[in-house]
Length: 225
Image (cartoon, rainbow, N blue to C red; front, side, top):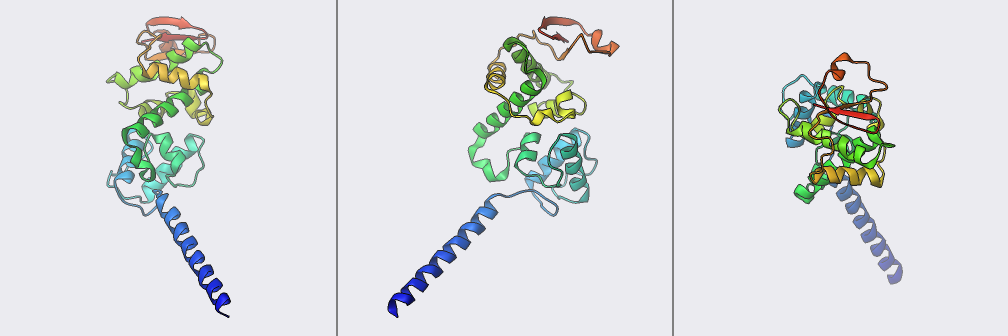
């Protein structure tokens, strides 16, 4: 009888611990969604407003306008359209989620590298290694230019800036070459010679892009200012 009672107590303790762990895990993955408030929501609103997805006030309140803007962003960038700013959506925006904020600046740097690697892979896979670094350098040159957003995510997700974002290829997993090319560009290598645009002369039809001063041609891309 005493043995059964001890077993019941042990089972009860295990059950309680399991429930505590489940609750802790659920709470530790804090997602911004309809009804949320706080700094992360303000960051989301600021980014989406800058990129033209959101026209409301930056008030830190995840209301119906923010919900619609997040869905619009997700739909435009090949993400799951659920209106929830989960890990993938936040990474696409270049926002470090509150559930992983302990990494500080190193986490932010890693997010930039990952996003830049995805851009390189989706825009320039198949190009020479130097050509891939040059594409990454164009993004960084835009970040430094007053004519463009001042963050990597802002440049990449600026509406109409890159075909790979428009068609969803930005969400492909980059290979090691694209990642190395992105890192080399971040380290300061710029084979584009300061270019802020590039295009494929075999497919480009815009008279405006042809009018830009060329800096160099690498592979299938012409780089220009």
